[in-house]
Structure formats: C-alpha cells, structure tokens
Image (tube, rainbow, N blue to C red; front, top):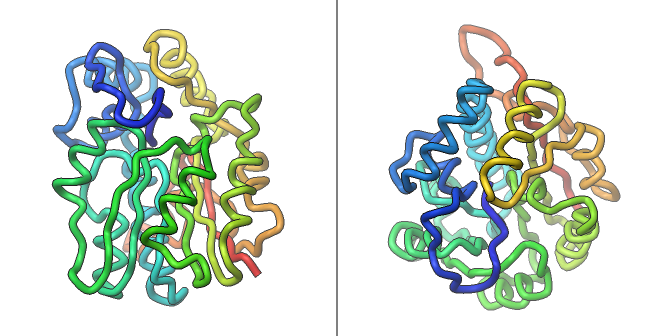
Length: 268
C-alpha cells in the first residue's frame, strides 16, 4: 500500500506518516520514521489484526506472482503502488522462476524511489526498472512503462493495496479500466484491497484517516473489489480474503480470513 503524493520527485516529509512506510513497519521493516511507527502503533492499539493483514497480503502477492510467472507463463509485470522493498518482491519471485522476466515498479514516494534504485536489482537476463508516477495518471504510467515493457505481449498488472487510496469521487474503476484497456489479450489483473468485512478494521482505518494527516484509505466491500475485475475472466478461487487465495498447504488447514480481499483475472 503506497500513498498518492503530490507529484514526481516530491521531497520526503518526515512529519506526516506515509502508508508505504507504515506498511513497512507493520511488516517488521526498518525503512520508516518515528511518525510512521507512532501511526502504526496507534492502528495496532485499535486493531491488532493489522499486522496479520500486512503479512497475509504480502504472502498473497508472492503466490500470485509465482502462479503468473509459472503456470500463467507471464514474463512482464507492471507493479503499481510498489511500496518499500521487503522480501520476495515481485521481480525476485518472477525472475526466480523465469530470469528473463521484465518488471516495472511504479510509486511516487521519494523514499521508495531511493530504496528501489538501490535494492530492486534484477537478473542480467531480464529487466527491473522503477518509474515515479501517480496511479491516478494512467497515461503517464503507460507511456513510461512502454520503454521497458512490450505492450504487444501479455503483461500482469499488479494493483496490490493501492486502489483504496483512490477515493470514490476520483473514479477508481475508470483508472483500472484505462490501465487494463492498454494490455493485450492474455494479460492479467491482480488486485487486492482492504475490505469492510471486519468492523474493528474499518474503525481503525477511520481513526487513522482522521488523525494522521496522510492520504485517506477507503476499505470497500468484497463486491466493490470484485467490480474492478468486470469484463475479465476471474481465475479460481475468485475474489476472496487474501489469506485464502490459493494458500500453501500446511498441517493446520485453511488460514483464517482477514479484512483484505482480492483476486486475479485474465483478459481474453
């Protein structure tokens, strides 16, 4: 999850919490500031399950990329709302299976840019690049991504936790439609976002939105999240809690649902 800032190359503001850095803190990372740690602590006080949402969301991303680069045969990824690098980033998972994979990361937090340039280094056979842009400006994203990706070949569009930062009045579905429209047949959309299925989670997010000064986040119903996939072919198991999207086999059975839902769909 990454904030939508004020524009390219904006200065890092360490006085206001930023969702990419808060997310990094929830995942146990160190790329954050005291204001971000304080915001994360306040969220956890109201809703301790937020850390589990962060982990389960990250695990789903790993499984999605593994599926797309493996069974799906995808060799190009457009990951918008990258956030701060952690473990098993999109390019690491994809290039582990297919070293020639080409990945374009998109975010607009200058701190993310600094870390991306230093850490998001891929295989020599493939390509790993970063562009600074706002998800609400699909034209700019597509124009810059075309310098690395071949838009005549299938691409996986990754919108993991980012559309909740686009308010309803900003028409988030139109943003997704415009991005998907640029993709060729055989491409995929992978998307998840916070859902309104847990009142405690919704309360925590509402409190964060009011108190933090950061870009507000909007949890949506699973049905609203599913609407982002309209016109595409959802693959099994459809739109579900991120913890239940093709979970890894384990002795303890199916993991519990968390208040974050998503899925993967193919463009015919």
